[in-house]
Image (cartoon, rainbow, N blue to C red; front, side, top):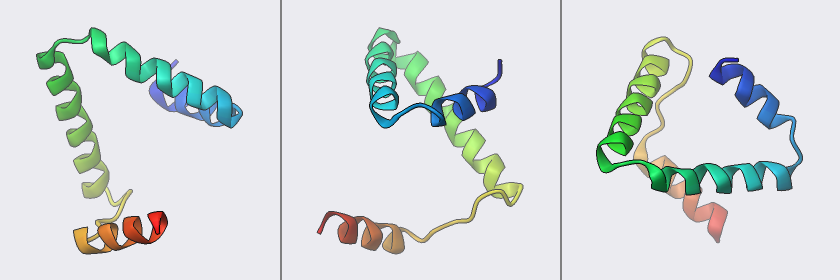
Length: 74
């Protein structure tokens, strides 16, 4: 099963189960070394760059992201 299929299945879970799974995943990261965590972030950055280059996602200016975040927590 690939990551896309896993993501699809996770989205089908109720909110509480997704939250519990997310907590478990975050806690499991504590088992990784600093270099493993760095490698995972590098992979994520590459994935996001690929999505941008393929036109699958759009860039959002930082000031707009910050404005949205401030509005969401106000």
